[in-house]
Figure (cartoon, rainbow, N blue to C red):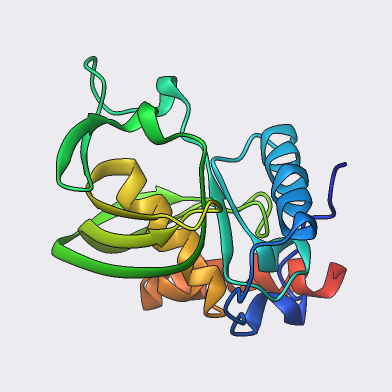
Length: 185
């Protein structure tokens, strides 16, 4: 079932999400609906607050054609080098992220901020501890698009949007567009 993706101006996008206490059938059903919604809207990540659910839950699926370079992107998964594709789609709850490395600019967009893209500076790498739906823990060390996507989606869990992280000059440039989006909410 396709879910309604909440848009800029909706207060649910600014709330801090509650931890997931228990993996239930309802949660697994929500995950299926979130994945279906993400694919239908051509996104690569979706956090539960974006569909109106105040829960620390994220789905990510980076298609092969989005990977950087010609070779499969390799990441460290539980201490072993593996192709990024081997863990997609990535579905997790209660993430713990430790971004590191130099900051770099990258153009981001968001399913909850339709029609606006902007450069955002974020750390280049992330160490992450993610709880999967089977209760196991995945420890990742990655860079590239997956590191950026993890930071972007986990920001949603703390009530941040990528437009909060743009430069002061970009905020001035985006102000009219964001005001218009908020008014249409």
